[in-house]
Image (cartoon, rainbow, N blue to C red):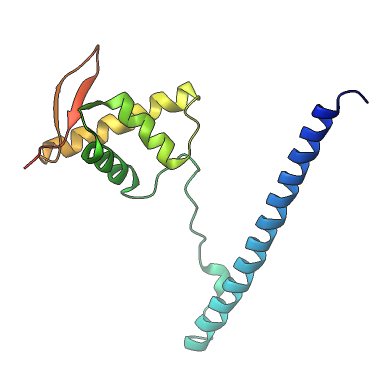
Length: 145
């Protein structure tokens, strides 16, 4: 074969995926052990509990943030900024901090909207302030003491 660079890239990708699978299998194995330990502990306190009746709590989707995560990123970004930022700039920073794909235009638009909602929420409480900016965007900053 003359396409050795393609073959070596595919081999590297396969090795990466196999490594991820092994890592995730180890995580699942440890979670099963942890769950089993919690189940035994529950039964120590109350042997009559039916564990199957305990509802599973769903894990948030990958693009969904944990409570307060976006607020922490937005406020930290504004505090560390040397100049007022647009909601688009802050939204991109949120995506970078959360490890989301900034090239995904649909997701970027969604994150800019969520960032704008977060900023308006904190503007009402006096934590951030806005001023006119380029186009439809506003410039945001934190009041300095």
